[in-house]
Length: 77
Image (cartoon, helix red, strand yellow):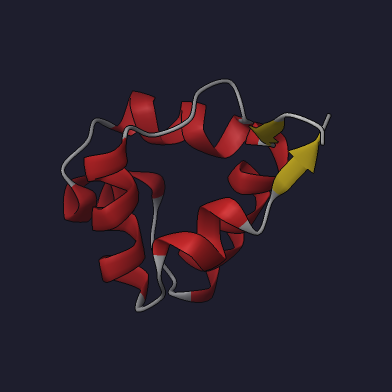
């Protein structure tokens, strides 16, 4: 079996779509989830993946679950 890795780029695209669908700015989304705007921008660009507590905050904010947002974007290596 291959190793599982999160696909940061796909996760970022998903988070961006969720934010835009809710009509939020980066600053509004970041504040609602307890992170800086800079961190949020890094999540959306795929240059950084949120720590587990932030993943939970994002999922709760957008009414989804962590698995759907972060782990359906898993790449098999």
